[in-house]
Image (cartoon, rainbow, N blue to C red; front, side, top):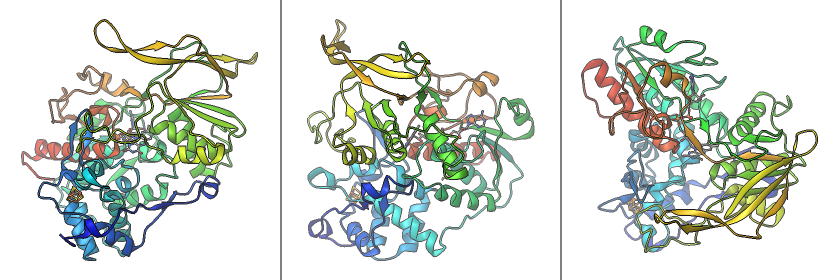
Length: 494
Ligand SMILES: Cc1cc2nc3c(=O)[nH]c(=O)nc-3n(C[C@H](O)[C@H](O)[C@H](O)COP(=O)(O)OP(=O)(O)OC[C@H]3O[C@@H](n4cnc5c(N)ncnc54)[C@H](O)[C@@H]3O)c2cc1C
Ligand code: SF4
């Protein structure tokens, strides 16, 4: 433990973000990195708890509590406080292959469970992680070590965080790894979901280039099940690992859903990033919402990304509809005690930007969309809504009940559907006749990754359902260990 009284001496200080009026004019990351001295002081706040709940990594009350990667947080906090950055990087990379991703996009369940958060404010674990890995890249500490070649070949389908994580570990263990990706760039939702202002795409390219140099092959623009069959992969490889995500988006079943101007959020976000990377948006191959009235259906993080992207286009107005009530300002300890993830109102970067531009939070709560109305040309013109309350039915289940007289008509040119995902696409699971679970995810035994097909494994959102980057990385890691065991009959600890 670095400084015994650090938690009493210093307050939590978060990193600052670039001013809204400046940052909404570009697509750069919004974070202003902290200085080395500031980070050392923040690390000194860690109490090096006997039971560090920050690295527990479990599900409590239906949400993630602690770090799913079991990061050795108190150890690297101590090393950072002492200025031993290289050793801190070694402890961090012992459990996390991609801290540059999690340090930017992870909602930090570790901080939600930090003991310090019980009475005061949690340690800034995520910001410390970010600084360790950025310093490690700057100082040249990041190197990939490999075991001697085993002669075994593994195909991974999908290059999101789960696919990248398993590729990293299988390659490290000496296997020959090929990653198949249908898009023109690798990274999955890191690349074509999460916007550039949260995760600059050069950060993904930096990692991909290291992975390629270490021998991992990426086969892009190749959809398994269309451009190459799973049968061919099974013939050519000793094992096949499915990391194709849960990309089937949830639609809105109302009148007008087929009108021009209604899009899935991921299509809006991915086209924007692709056009940005290909041509700085000059090729116009994106859904432009400049001067448009945008309604986003879904009050979660994907909706927030859509709001921030719309504001950068220069939209006329933006609203985010949420069917659930507004979260409380503080944790409700009676029903949501520490160390559970604190369920409280978050004003994220997209909402902060909307508040600065339009004067109010774009989120509208307890609202249900009844229909979308178009003009004579079939373009979206209006969204009709009604307010709802949540009541118990005869079986005691909570159901939405319309509030009479609360109907409202919203002017709209674009409607973005950000209501989550239903599960994996069917092509590969059907081709392999895989067993699925009740949510249509690829089924494996509890905490295992072998599917119902011989030498086929699954990890990430495709197995778990739509989740978090950190869980995808952990699934990729554990699946790699299981594939290794299958290939060589030897256990390994990753
Ligand atoms: C808009 C958005 C924002 C998000 N923001 C965050 C965030 O800030 N923080 C966070 O922790 N989580 C976030 N998430 C969730 C997170 O991105 C996912 O949980 C995570 O990416 C899942 O990783 P994965 O590798 O399992 O799948 P994915 O990232 O979905 O990757 C699957 C890959 O497989 C490819 N693929 C699919 N089928 C085939 C095929 N047949 N052949 C070849 N390739 C195929 C896809 O093209 C894709 O590249 C966000 C999700 C969305 C949609
Ligand atoms: S729970 Fe918080 S204070 Fe305790 S070891 Fe983890 S980061 Fe440090």
